[in-house]
Amino acid sequence: MNKNIFITGASGLLGKALVTQFLQNGFTVYAHYSSNTPIQHPECKWLQGDFSTINSIRQFLEQNRSALETCSYLINNYGPITSKKIPELTSEDFYFDYHHNLITTFEITSFFIRYAPLKSVINVGFEFASQLKAYKQILPYACAKNAVYTLTLSLKEAYPHIRFEMVFPSTIEGAALASKNAKTISPIDMAKEIFNIIDASGGQNPF
Image (cartoon, rainbow, N blue to C red; front, side, top):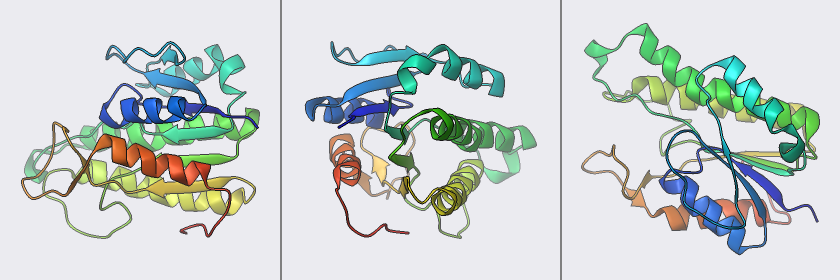
């Protein structure tokens, strides 16, 4: 059984927990980080990458193609968040969040569909992604994550032999940005939930 997995945004709170969870369960983990010094695991294969432009994303994928094309599992966890009140927003804020959430997810997933023996893709959203509601502080991010949800549904329809799912975690404990009344989940518990989805041998797809 191929147990190679690629995780983006692997040096963040959830990313670190995902790396640990999959290593502990016998996976070979290829872990992307941008600039933060990653947690060290002898078995983890860290891959530094700049996702700030489409060309840099594609360059990263080509440079690491020999490793990435062995992976059967993909977790798109990368995705910075813009936090601004609505009167302060500019078009550039929407462009930034769409690029770093939707475009990166699409570019990376498309690469894996073409070149890897892909079995399962998990896209990480946030608690209210897929819901139509108003946002006061994270509007560009919410719009971008809702677009990722639509992308997830569409890819699931187009590629029925691959399992596509999106998870909607509550605020990760320790996150720099969280509302006062936010429900929280530990990164370890969320990583276990994601692992259980990938590890499941069958069952109903939640879509």
